[in-house]
Image (cartoon, rainbow, N blue to C red; front, top):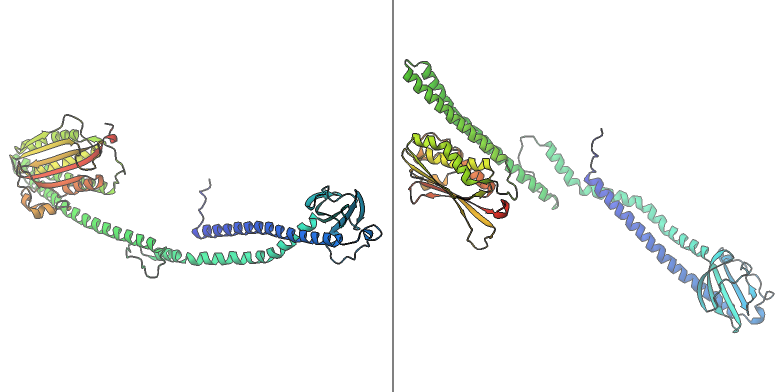
Length: 468
């Protein structure tokens, strides 16, 4: 099975296109030249016919008979193709030696005519003679005229045919020279080391190629930032994983050396807690990796009910809240609260917000989750759109301005919440990545009712997107 046809190179496509255009222009020029030459030659030869008729008309009547006209000497190779006839009352009074016996033209009105006589095509000039009862017809073979036009075109086509290969060679050289900067760029890219992300030089680059070089330099810069961020992320992840693994190892050793069941049970419970923390950290790392690789659709439809996601996640986290005597209160709308987030990502968003609220709030704290579906009231708001608002607030210590400004940094944990010791510092990174990916509006401030942190996340959803 043969593979797909290899596409033509840019140089060949330019060369073939320019040569084809030149050939078309040459052919169009040849056609126009043919028509112009045919017209001009016809005008010139018609004038010669009229001149010959004028000379014939000056002959006396007594000389215009078969005995009075002697064959003219042949002075040019085209001369035998020009003939004349003198008619008197329908009788051929005189004619040239090579003229046919039948009339060159059936017309008697003065003028030029195209006709056939003796099986040949003629160009005929008809005019009355010196005497009113005479009719003169001077004709020329059309083949002779066509031969003259072809001879003229051949004389012009020879230099064109000679210069066409030279022109093709010049076009090939010009195209190749014009594409030299692209070949130089390709050679520079092939010669680079795989790990090299240094920008390409822009000095001396033609203006047409400069946008490509600048785009490549921008790509190299973004890749360099991405690699640096990933390297930092990998180092931070390794550091963060080392802590729970070390804790798990230590608690396992304590369990091995425990002298009674109570001490062993306590160590095993701590081991399970460390495993849960490591599992949560790995899950968040995988979520971030998936979100970094995901691209949101250009016009994402509403795909999930945010209220359902809150109910599901709150049910999962309720045992942890009860274990710390924390109150988890939900305020959900009775109707469908559609959002652009897919169901799985909506649950990821809600889980990270609730997990942070429970984790960083002290025992006995209150956590309130509210979902609202509002109609936009601002200028230019579409009547087919609505806004879904998710609000999570708690009665914990909250955050100061410095810590609030750093929210979203990977592995950052606020100083005011450091007593909890259970967070990985990735929850807010996941929330903000979802916000950038799906154009969510995120606001963080202090709760006026509970006194702790308040997080509000809103998104405008078109009603047409979810069939409302």
